[in-house]
Structure formats: C-alpha cells, structure tokens
Image (cartoon, rainbow, N blue to C red; front, side, top):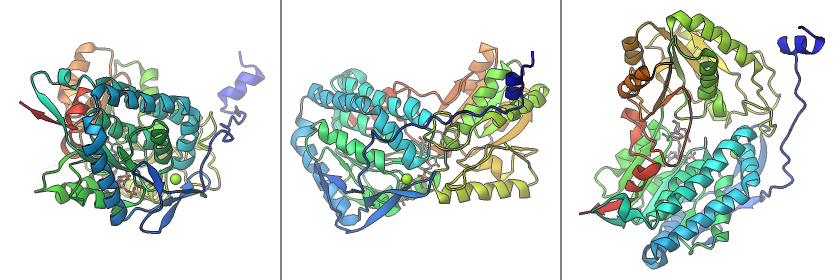
Length: 490
Ligand code: NAP
Ligand code: MG
C-alpha cells in the first residue's frame, strides 16, 4: 500500500541522515619522513610534496620526496638487513614478525580505514570492509608459509631473491603494500617499497606498524615520491627483484629498463574486464554484480567489470534495472557510511575520465549518467553508462579507470566469448548464468587471470591473481605468490 512514507521511497525521496566516520581517533602527522633502516629520516633531496584529500582538495600532510641518493640509502639498508639478520633468521621467527604486523593492522583497523578514505577518496565502507581486512589477511596468510616453504615446492631447494623493489598504485594503497610486502618477507627477502604519490599515508602508517612490530632495522624500507623515485628503484643495481603494480604504460617502461639485467620481475598491469550476463542469470543479483563490478571504488579497479555484455533477450530489462539502481547510488563524502561512490583519486585522474566521456560522445555512443547531486569541492564523477558502442570504440578498448561502463549485447555463447576476448588486456572477467556447464565453458574460454561466476571483485589471499596479455606477467597471492619471491633450485 502506498503510505506517504513508502511513496516517498518509491519516488527516490529518502534522505539518509549523514553518518560520518569520526576522525578523532586518527593521527596524521603534519610531515612524514622516509622510513629507512628502521628510522624515520629526512630526505637527502630536502624536498617534500603535499598529499591532499581529493574530497575536499585540502592538504592532509607533507611527505618526503625520495631522490636517487635516498633510494640508494634504502637499498643499502635493505641489503644490510638481508645479509644480516633476516635471511639467517629461523623461518618460524620470520613468521612471528609477519603475524605481529597482521595483528597490529587488525588492532588499528579503524585508523587505517579512515586514513585510506581521507587520502585516496574511497568510501569508508570499502576501506573498512575490504581494504584493511584483506591487507591484514594477506599478512596472516603469508606468515603461515614462512616456515613451510619447502613443502610448497616439494623436492626443490628454496632460496630468497635478496632485495625486492616494490612499486604500487593509488587505488588500494594499503592492500597493494600488503600484497607486495607479506610474501617478500615470508620468503626471506628484504624490501624497498614505494607507494603512489597521491596516497602515501597508509604506507607511512604501515611503516609505524613495522617499527612497532620490532622488525630488524632495514628489513622494510618505505620511500615516498613520484614516478622518478620508482624509476630510481627499478634501475638501482642493488635490487634483485622488481614487483610493480600500475598501468600498462609504465609497466612497459619498466620492462624495457630491466631488459638484459639479471633482475627478476612481476608486473600487475591494467585491465578491461568483460562482465557477461546470460538470459538465464538471476537478473537482480546480476545487476548488483554489475554495480559492484564497475562502481566499486569509483571504478579505480584494475579488474573492474568495465565492459558489460548482456544477452540480447534480457538487455532492455537489465539496462532498465541498472539505471534504476544507479539512481539510488549515493556519491559524496567518502567518510560517510552511506556513501556508495567516493571521490575520484586526483584531479589528473578526473581529467582522464572526463576526456573519455568526451571521446565516447564523439564516437557516437549514448551516454547515461545518474542524476545525483555532487559536492561543490573535490573531484567527482557520476556513475556513467555508454550504450550504442561498438567493439572498436576507444571507450570499449581502453582502460578508463573510472565509474564508466560500456554496454554491448550478444546473442550466442560464441559471440560473447569472441567479443569478451577482443581486448589487449586479460586480467579478469565475470559470468552470470544459472547453468554450471556454461560457467565451466566460460572460465575456460575467457582469456583472463581470474573469472568470477555469479559474483564479482571477490578476493582472497589464498587465490592467485594476475593477468594475461598486456595485463601483466606473474601472479600474486596464494602459492603462486611465493614463487615470485624465491629462487627454486633442484
Ligand atoms: P602508474 O601511473 O603506472 O603508477 C604506478 C606506480 O608506479 C606509482 O607508484 C607511480 O608513481 C610509479 N611510477 C610512475 N612512473 C614510473 C616509472 N617510470 N618507473 C617506475 N615507477 C613509476 O599507475 P597508477 O595510475 O598509479 O595506477 C593505475 C593503474 O594500475 C591502472 O592501469 C590499473 O589497472 C593498474 N592496477 C593494476 C593492478 C593489478 O593487480 N593488475 C592492481 C591495481 C592497479 P607515482 O604515482 O608517484 O607517479
Ligand atoms: Mg592523497
């Protein structure tokens, strides 16, 4: 019955009361130094850069900018720690340190979540329910492997690689740090980590955790900076292994720089995932999966389901339901627990997304954006759909890395596969159907490192993650993630 209250709900008139996460419990310093050799040290460069809150454009802190001399210091500290205590320590003791990191992250979960949300613009709900628990889970998982490496690779002798240089992006700052640091330490390596320029704060909090966990000095070094800092790590002769997560463009530069060197490397790069909805799927669940696939974390997800393929007979229904659902999504204050879509991570990224919105229109696609209000300050993008696109359109082929979905239809299974695989990327994919047989055929035919069935964007430390084609080389997570940090001998 249409009471005045539920009529209001049907008209989309509900106003949620604000439910902001408090920031009283967090501590952000005015200035952060580099974390080298177990100490917070001033940068040789003498320079600092600002990290801002992309939801307000206000400065949160000033952070040290590491130059070649700083990176050199960090690599030397890592080498010393590697030769000294870390590679000689009993593996079970290494495990204890890693467990300690996991537990301290859990204890400080609220602080990590709030800072992640402030520095990067992601909704607090995601930072709280996804980033931080998964980061801690990664440390727990790899702590367990530290003294069992020989069982992971039966019949082989396992040796660490030495000093690992690790470079990470801004979309899951703490989680990407955990993906990199946890397996490296479990395997007996030491680390020089560089977070992204726009999101250094949870990495610096991780430095505090590492210091509090009492790790021997120099085992983990964290150098903040921009692209040049990353490039300095890549070219440093004292680094044995490079682990990079970021764009395919920078991945190519790194691969070129490493060609001919003895350094091992893993590259986790971009993606343009196909999310495929068959007519026999549970449509309402699939619509939630589409929303999660592309609007989760503002679409700042390498494995985002940014290409939607819907079977023709249900396309109209799916698109209608999707538009209805988009109208209910709340875009705004990332610290508010009601918020579904937070701030775009930086001005530069917002400009990139906006340029793709223009490109899509020029290519003749139809654009649909939800009608939600946007805050006055900060960087925002309404959830967006492109329909009427073709396979060759740039908005279908290129990674936009924002809340922008390109929708196409298909009639047959084979058509869905050939369209889904028509991409230079191969990181992830999704399939929605009632039929198990279709799921199995699909997962074998989509050329992607992970294919989710009747769900999307699910992660677990036990499960390997990584790409085909231009999405990268190597795997992170699970047993495969150990392989990337070990020399295996007969
Ligand atoms: P990016 O521009 O490639 O940057 C990634 C990291 O590399 C940052 O720390 C960056 O530093 C640094 N960097 C920049 N230029 C460098 C150079 N010449 N040498 C060494 N390091 C350099 O990528 P992003 O824009 O931060 O992140 C978005 C990209 O990451 C997307 O393409 C996304 O698909 C990908 N990604 C992939 C995965 C995966 O697992 N496959 C996961 C997450 C994200 P500054 O930020 O300080 O410039
Ligand atoms: Mg920031």
